[in-house]
Amino acid sequence: MDYAIELSNVTKKYSEFTLNNIDLKVPCGCIMGFVGENGAGKSTTIKLMLDLIKKDGGTIKILGKDSTQLSNSDKEKIGFVMDNCCFPEVMNATEVGKFSSKIYKNWDFKLYYDYLKRFDISLKKKIKEYSKGMKMKLTIACALSHNPSLLILDEATTGLDPIIRDEILDIFLEFMQDETHSIFMSSHITSDLEKVCDYITLIHKGNLIFSVEKDDLLESHGIVKCSEQELHQLPSKAVVRYRKNQFGVEALVNKKYITKQLLMDSASIEDIMLFSIRGMKL
Image 1 (cartoon, rainbow, N blue to C red):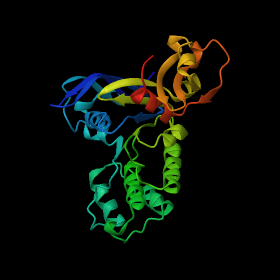
Image 2 (tube, rainbow, N blue to C red):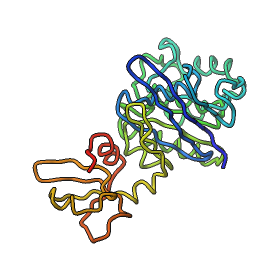
Image 3 (cartoon, rainbow, N blue to C red):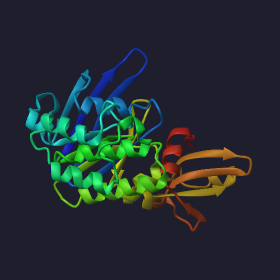
C-alpha cells in the first residue's frame, strides 16, 4: 500500500508538553480525520509534517519522501489550509490569484476563477470586508488551484455555519474523486469527520490513542446504560471506558466481547472521543 503521510516514532519535546512517539499512516486515496482536545498535539503534529518546526526524533514521510528533503516541486503537491486567512486584508481575490501564481508553477487560473465563481467570491472586494466563511472559501480555493495531491487542513471548518461547512465538505469529496488524492484534516467538528473520513486518529496529551478505519470504529463500539452492578457483570475486555452519572453508569463497549443481548445505543466519533479521554477504566 502507498501512503500519503507516514509518521514513525515522531517525538517533539517542549518544557511542558511532549508529542510522544507518534505512529500513523494515511493511505493514498483516503481522508483521515485527526481529533483531540485543545492542546493534545494536533497542530504540533501538522507543523512537523510541514517541516515548520523540527522534530526531536522519528521519521516523517510526505508523498513517499522525507519531509525535510522535499523539493519545491514536491511542496507544490501539498495544499495547506489553517483556520484563518493568511493573505493581507488589503488585497482582493484577483490580487491574491496573481500573487499565488508567482509562488506556484502549477497555478491554474481557470481552476481558481472557477472556484471563486462557485463560492460566489467577489473579485474586487477587499479581504477585510469578507465574512469568516468567505475568507475560508478563498483560502481553500487557493489551496486547490495549484493542483495538489495532498490536502492538510488544520481546523479549516471551525467557526463556519453548517451551510458553508457542507459546501466545503462537498468540495473535499470532489477532490477525492481522483484516487491519487489524499486529505489529512484536524477538526473539533466530529460530525463533519463522520460524513467524509475513511480513517479516524485520536490524540490525547501528546499520545496517540488509536488510528483506525472510521467504519470499523463506529460499527465495533456501542454505549450501554446500566447500573454499576450490571457494569461489573460485563466481560472486562468489553468495557472500553465508563462514566458515572446520577442515573447510574454509561459505558463505551466493544461489541465483539459482548456475549449476551443488551440494549445498546450507537456510538458517534464524539462519544468515542469523550469516553476515551474522560472515561474511567474498569
